[in-house]
Image (cartoon, rainbow, N blue to C red; front, side):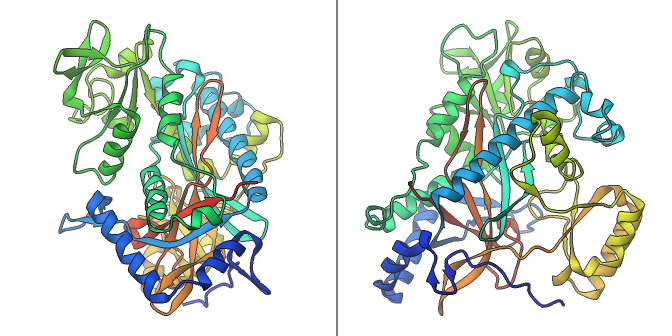
Length: 474
């Protein structure tokens, strides 16, 4: 296996703590290891009592797991966040413009900036959405943009999450936990709040109500049910927004609207924040075997009687082959140079790129174009000869299904280990709310951390954990 690449330590520089961490480091020095470990156990018990869990698909035991939480925060300076926010907003605007275009005039395809076949042959592209304009022209009401850091001023977008981005409940609960565990810290360090996210989410969704809405918009969260890996989040957000949590069997078509069952009869729903994939939304229009969706929901949506967030077909922006064209997409729709850079990407569908990837497999990270959650990927430097050979066979058999990227030296933030502070690799998922006239970016987001020493895989399903993310006030 290859030696680990030297990483940028976000907390410690050559001369000690970096400026963003100065106040925290001074506080930390005054704390005893015994007290900190006790606080860590207390935080774990809080997560257990609250029920902050997730399911892992393919787990034979079908057991719920706690999200591992580390009590050392990840801290971002106000200046750094200002630049990131500008780049995130630019990218999200471009994604929405791209989605509108590919479901209407397809100017970017006509201009040759994105290959037509990449859209036409993409399972995430929904022909049923051609010519359909969502209320307010908003396709991606909630976006998660995954960022990685490699240096003092070097941030990259790792991927875009425009279908059903998850993790915001962990961001909120992480902050709540830290406030309970260390209230004195928040008087010493001025941190921007994140607790207003549910209020902003409800306001943003309501602003996208369909033309059929004549009163205060009724918002509901559509969940696949308790066996979904993110069910805790679905229930949490519905509760925090004051919205109803519904499953497909709670909904039906009534008088040309989608209505939910209540104790007083059926009530029309204006905005459906769905956490169900496109294929399962409506058995009459998509997968006829689906028991999770609502028959006729897409027809009501297309007729202007319902807002679905995120819009059907928005998931094509998650595609990792599309991701490789994002610099062109941003430039095409904004006329600007992208503020946030992509990670260099080889598209294995292209023969020369495939040749390079196969020759350098031990140095690269290879991902499925439709993959998520860390499944179906190869981290070359951490793979055995047998794993490399098996993955090479997959690449040769279905090259269109993969992209490859260099193994970046992801930045590190310390975790509280038995021996004290120990660096671990992290990424960041800021959450963005899009409405017709406003884009709200929550200051911070979800920091995911690879708890295994040297690991670059931060997903909770693959052994990762989370941290509270602090964006400092100006």
